[in-house]
View 1 (cartoon, rainbow, N blue to C red):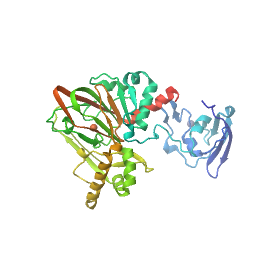
View 2: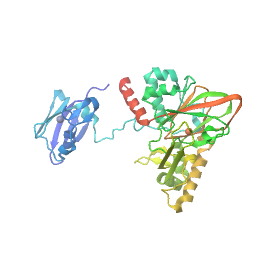
View 3: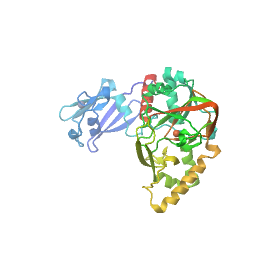
View 4: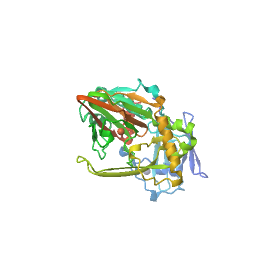
Length: 392
Ligand SMILES: [Fe+2]
Ligand SMILES: [Zn+2]
């Protein structure tokens, strides 16, 4: 670990209302007076145990000027006295972390995502279930793979319902949805709902009709007896967005700017409380820098209503969605995996599309999958805590 930084000089500039601070590393930075007052670390102004600011905005003076300042504790502390005699002491290490001059990118919040296609076939990162439960570094590595690649297979788990709750509890807790803590996908050939039938499920994300759509999905094979087919497929939405942008800037523009309505109304199952959800979102969601953030695609639950699209653009939107569909099914984009009993696919539901091929069952066979979710807030929080405890 690097030696703790020391302050070498503090220069006040009352015309700009800031200090220039220099450190022994050679770093020099600008620190506005009002920011320093607002971020006073004394017990009256801040609770370190819960990192909570106690300073009130109503008491803040944007034009405040300190009375005096000095570097103390052999360069490790900047001491500032304010006009009302309030005393602030800032560790040099704290000031060193809070650099206005440089974008401090948090690698957990802004991961370096790697896009992929069929090249991932036979090379999906794989983790052992028991090791994930016992080894914090393994748990971190799994979450890191989900954060950067978006797909991992977990092997070695018992093939029984509720197993994924153990893994979720290592992270935080399951994200509950209208389907409960987990949902069970059993199959009957005559099922009304595609999910419960033997038919293929086309590429989709789960529950895009929710405002807080699930972040990480866990899909475990609990039973697979005399089943022929029923393979899982995965496509990287980030790679799709790159390809669409390249091939049709017009379609890319429409799908990144026009919101599509998603809706589901489920009142027909006695084991579920009736629900009716709606959410409009762009098919390809970008962040404020124009970078890929999420894909929102599910033909099954795309609503007939197109509330966010002028009627004159409807045919163009269909054209763009059709092009995106054609690209997603290109063999160069699709990763296949046949989940054996006990195996679990874990993936970023905001980034990947997933699908299932059709299957048949002979004789006394059956197929049962369990599906559950984690939220990214919780997963990234666990990553940061693990980074600290493991010294990463
Ligand atoms: Fe799904
Ligand atoms: Zn204070």
